[in-house]
Image (cartoon, rainbow, N blue to C red):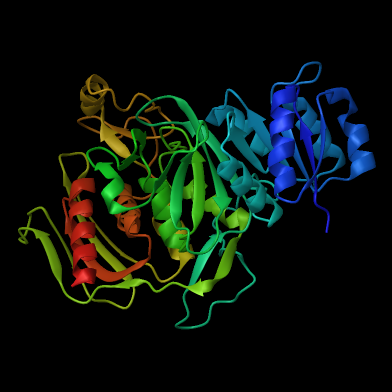
Length: 427
């Protein structure tokens, strides 16, 4: 077994520290501060892994990464930087970096990254650039295991996924890198800049006004619901998500997340995962015609009947959706985009929100019509509410089986239902 690690860093103290850590862990370490000699070292030493500093004299680390991946595309490279941000991490991952970690790094964080990479969890980003043929909806590729009737397995992605974009509410450039994760690890949002992480759990939900926000230890990640919705549809429950303060809005829907998940492939793992099966009817709000309420009752799969009632020109819209397959979600729900009235954006701006709302990532409506785009569905607004609801349901970490009837509800109502479901499971 090849246990050689090549460390490329111009700082001797960093190389010395890494030599000590990795040697103690049983690795053979070769190191250099001379970027110009790296390609020769690769020929002579044939390492199993490269640790490469982003900021190198003479040759930029990103350019050196490009050269390494050009000549040795299968060789995993972990980038290390003292000035990490999600933009540089996304750029490095798109070029084939297996991971991106921040200096000063902790020993546990470094070893966890190396272990994940050498175990095959990060072989490079998925080639998700090709568009699907018009009118076609892909079925997710699954690796290793074929799911049989009545069998539910834990799942992760087969390859890393990288996406860049702009945050809907912060307006800042952001990105997201999805890494395969071991069974039993759950879905975790991790910072690129440090070792902090936020597991997906109800106790970490801190905001459900205009988006769903997770927070822990002074750090927050906004607008997780669209990504979580796609993960729900694909039944992915083990995932390491590296990002900054907000998930990119992309086109305002979940379609791009689905496209990248399909391209990466889905890995069925050995451990079982049972969906949450609702045992009794739960109602949040006052259940009446035209009222605001949400109800769930037992069912064999996830079924959602949603009624939306907005001022004109949106009006009343009703959607019935059954999650019988991932392709049903990709076809019927994932393309539905977030929306808002033009007058609301002034209010949101005063609140410091919607700074990233653009003509291509949100449906804008004035008092008479949609002003910036052509609708993908006549009832696209109600379908997006279903998309958000599925994302909020997945805060439970497992697919939900139940029949939901919702009227005029939003993120706060969804969270109240999710909390009631969790409470019912403990009784």
